[in-house]
Each structure stands twice: as C-alpha cells, then as structure tokens.
Length: 233
Ligand SMILES: [Zn+2]
Ligand SMILES: [Zn+2]
Image (cartoon, rainbow, N blue to C red; front, side, top):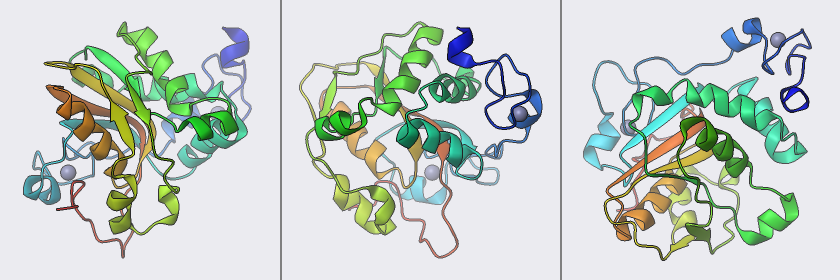
C-alpha cells in the first residue's frame, strides 16, 4: 500500500499519506456544485441543461468531480501517457467523493480501449481507475462486457460536431443486460459523444440505467457551440 500511494504529495512533494496533501487536494479545480444531472455541465438552478432537455442522452446521469484544468489535466496525463499507474487510485478516490449520491450499480464497466491501443499502452487507464472504485464500492468490475471494435481517431483533434460521427459503431456488446444498472468509468468526458455511444449499445442489450462516472469534465470553451450530447439527429 505504501509503495502504491507513496509517502509524498504527487503535486508538491510535501509529506502525505494519500498521494495528495490536504492543501493540494483543496486547490484542485472542482466542478461547481450546480450541474446538469445528465451531462454534469455547470448550470444555474435547473435539474437538466437545455441541451439535455431538448435531446436526452442515452445515459441517465453523469457523476464528475473535476474540471479539465491544471493540475487535473496533468494528473490524467501522468496516468495515461507516462504510465504512472499510482495516479489511478488518487483519481479514483477523488471520484468516490461524488459517488455517494449514486445508488449502487449492478456492475462497473471501464471505458473500453481498442485492442491495438491497449497493446501500445500496455494498460487501460480507465480500467485502472475502475478497478479501485469497484473494490471500494464492492461492485463487480466487468471489463470484458463490451469491446471497442473501431480504433477511432483521437477525439481531442476533432471539432465538437465531428465527435459524434467519429465514435459511431465504435463498440460491440453481446451480453444480456436486461434490467441492469451499469456505471461506465472514464478519466475524461469532453462532449460526451463516446459515453453516449457506449450507453446506446448497453441499452440495446437491455440495460435499464447507465451512468457515467467521470473524473474530469471538460467545459466548453467560448466559441465551442454547446451541442447536445446526443446531437447526431
Ligand atoms: Zn501537495
Ligand atoms: Zn446536460
């Protein structure tokens, strides 16, 4: 456990038993308390944002904890591209602080990675986070439930509207999920197009409820048109 979590704060090097010291933990870019229940974008007052009201996404709720800003972006980067696997439990613990509001799902599904990417990277970062959460919540982890069958170009390089098209047909799932409540775990959600596509596939297999458990939510920049998550229609 010691070697897993380290004895020093990952961000400032101060002594810390939990990977992040209290001061660094407090100064993370947390999402504001009022968020759309479906897509987790900040809104004032209402339960759902206008975009989710107009075109409800295929998932029910998104639980997210941080905004995509420094140092949340650096933590995600360290896990994903520098293979600092000890960052996964830290991100998982941050996400767990938001999950009390979610009834326990029947199973947890890490966002699937295409086999080729998995070979390149050697691990699925979403699965590293999901494994920790599954253990802490006592919910079964089922990474093999769905497969990524199309290696889509990275969403990051695409304009918002193209992202929905980019992920269409990306996943396959054969299991019977009738009546199941499934939580999808991922590190980052940007437009929600990938989460929406996977949720659609799970629903097609009978899933009754699909939630996104997401560490970092990207907020639209000025100039991005906030298109609905399911805005392909
Ligand atoms: Zn610190
Ligand atoms: Zn919304």
